[in-house]
Each structure stands twice: as structure tokens, then as C-alpha cells.
Length: 351
Image (cartoon, rainbow, N blue to C red; front, side):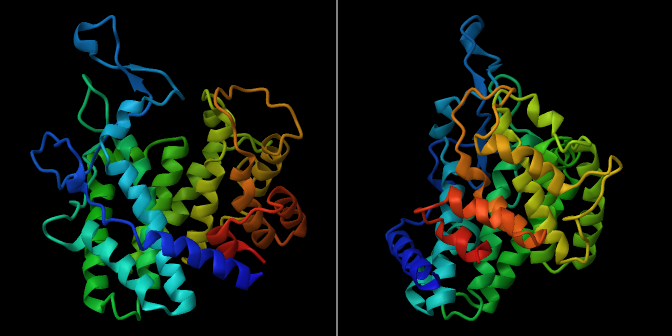
């Protein structure tokens, strides 16, 4: 099993060896700040309004993604960077082949360290709405990729291609970004978000606190996240704020955010896996409520305007088997994923 996964991982990593380094400087647009070093993106669910002069301000169509957003490449490239560095760094960690570390390090240095190509450590211009604003706190949902990138960089420690100085410089970048998240208007807006945006905010700030060595801050934020979890779940384990969306089944995968928070919180000594909310519910209750719908065993009674991929629940099942010490989740995961290979997911959470 491990040998097969390692072979598959190497094949993926070999593909990433051909990837051109990406940068915020590659985009064809410039934020209002006047520098391409600032990350920018456009709100995905807002569209040109033909009833208004010049189509402004844009109008909202929840769940309907505007293809205009792909004209600004920062979001796509950051996601590509996460996928590539995770695969390459893990391939180096397992095989010891320096070519994978060298490529991952090159990609990281281009995005974060090199003066001519690096991203400034803030997100003032994420998910802007044309005609309304130049950026919003909601844009921080896009930097979830930074959590995986931090893990990828940590795996490189000990390689010839990623020095202690490189790592210290990257940690400084993350510390600056974390400070911005904790003190800026956009960061505070996202911190206050009651839905999945609030969940992923906690996943990021706890992750970045751990990465930069601030255990006290990580523990404080992990404890604080309990109140957000309490506010999001009903006694049955439903997530009302996600069920209001036009792609409600997809949005209930907010649980993926909570599983991430729970894994990170463990490192601080805070236990969220079995934490009981004021309604006597927990993450396991929420997963058990969601499972039959996600697997197609029960009819979904809320909106889902786009096709749902039931494999999205696969990583949660693997983690649940370990976290809740119940093999039933692993059994369902194996049935769901029969014949398929989720290489990194299986290496990280599989048995």
C-alpha cells in the first residue's frame, strides 16, 4: 500500500518538476495600490449588471461563479503553488531525492522571498466587488492555501535546497501576514464571520501561529474557536448558515475547516474532536448528520444548484476513523474510494 502510494506520489511530483515558478507579478492587472506585489482577486459570485451604467455596481448571484475572476491569476496561482509544493516536499521527505526539494524551494522563494517576485504579506485587495469596493475580509478564504504551503516548507528542513535562513525568512513573512490578519479591518471582519469564513479564519491564524512559533497565541485562538463552533451547530449537527446557501451540500463541507482546526488545536493541547457545545453536540454529530446525504443515501432537501462530488467527504472519513476511534468511517471511506488514489490524503490520513 505505502509503496503504491509512494510511486503515485513520485509520478505527481515528476509532473510538478516541469512547473514554471508563479508569482503575484504575473497578473495582467495592478491593484489600486499601484504595485503588483499586492495580491488581488475579484469576488466570484458577483456579475456585470446590464441595467446599470457600465454594469456597475456588480450584482450578486450566489453559487454562480463569474468566469471573469480567472483573468486575475493570483488566486489560481496560489492554489497551484500549494498543490505543487505539498507534492514535491512530501516526495523529497519520503524518497530523499533532492530534485524534488530543489523544485519546491524554487517555487517558494519565487512567491515569498525573492525581492522582484514576492507577495506582500497582506490581503487588502482580495475578492473585490467592481463598483463597490477594492477588497474585503471575505477574500481571506483564498489564503487557506498558505496553511498547506507552510507544511510543505517545514518538510523541506534538512534538504540542501532549503536553508535555515530561507525558513526563518519565510516564517518572518508569515508572522507579518498573521499580524495583519489579527489587526487589520479585513482581518477583523473575517474574524467576526459567523459562517465557514470564520471557521477558515481560525484554521489559518492557528496554523500560522504554530508555524511562527507562537504557541501561546495558537492555544488562545484554539480555545476561542470553541465559541464559533458552538454558534454554528444545532443539536442535530446541522449547520444552518451553510444550509442557506444555493450550494448547501457543498457548503456543509465547512466541516473540513473544523477538522483542520481540530487537528491544529491538538498541537496546542486544546481538544476539539469531542468538545461538547452548549447544545450537547459535537463534530462527530455533525459528520454523522451529513454522511447519508453526502453519500447519496438520503435525498438532499436543501438547495444544491451545482453537481456535488461525494468524494469530498473522503478525507473527513479517514480523519474521523482516527479521531473518534471508530473503524466504520474507514470502512465507508474504502468503499467510497474503491479503485481510486488520493495520494497525499491517503499518505497523511490513511491506514
